[in-house]
Image 1 (cartoon, rainbow, N blue to C red):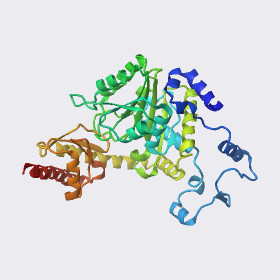
Image 2 (image 1 turned 90 degrees about the vertical axis):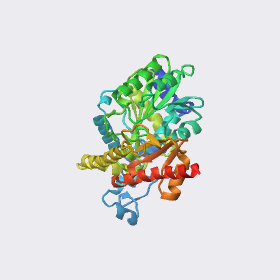
Image 3 (image 1 turned 135 degrees about the vertical axis):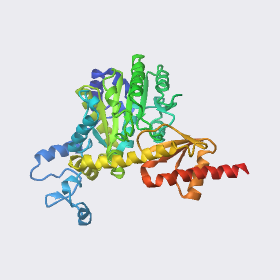
Image 4 (image 1 turned 45 degrees about the vertical axis):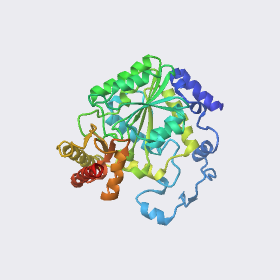
Length: 435
């Protein structure tokens, strides 16, 4: 094992032996090189005032070389802020700005031993880093039965972990904290579990209320008290899009410092929060740990980044930073929130109108981009293909009964027609089946 990795492991084990036990074999082996091209280039950048012949970029007239056809479209930005490599952990100013934003929007994180957010290539990359550091063959990754399908690829296929499912909703159509608790406690023999909490949930658009949130935290605490090391991952991809009386903060704050056997890891990003999907700017933040622990986890995270993508794209980080620093940012974001809330409210009004109750019910939703219909009379895949072929309408079939509808991408004025068409699609299939 590399001596740098060994030193990081010793620090982690000294600060919290349970977190060391959570690390995968790759997580224990990984480190960020202190010697080599990056470190030598950093030293040269500080001292080589005459000629700096270290890093693999090209300079011209004292600034990064660039093509005019590209710079003409980006003339609002200095070449140094878009063409140079961003640091592996991300643009420092962006990390600081996102940390301030995160604390402002999640007061429960204040004073909780919060690390500096590390920039990822959006949220999938952040989850992949968690998988690399903490998941290995046979480790349990606990997620609800209604989930984002990429979890299986990220944790299961890539890292060999075992996906453990529990029903998202209980009999009262609220978050099934008891199901989470049972899935967690079932891992006592393994002594370790990775829990992924995704609110607002994809695909249902559901966020628990405060009481449900307390039950989630209590379930994780109980598992820790039972001797289970819990990597508690909050996938906050749709954070902030809370349209009703639900949790308004990430559970990362309540999970930070909850118990020595609980590691709170927050995954979020500008992707959905700031409506910049193609920018691929996300963040991974560790919480509830000592400064020494946070520094060691950052080094291991940077090692994963260095070994995979080297560093994230610089231009998009600059663009997001510019937005966060703009005095118009909050007002413009509120404007888009109001549009999204209007769409969600219209969908709920339509579904509660009684027009469609004979063919479907819907899963509770109160946030995010999506909602899910539970079909009563036809199969979801049959309806999905029929809607495409006859009505040129796209939806997502999930299992036999569930149809996901993304109201985020439909203008409010078109929602009536959308759901009327889905309803008619059901009637079409029923008519053929009845013959």
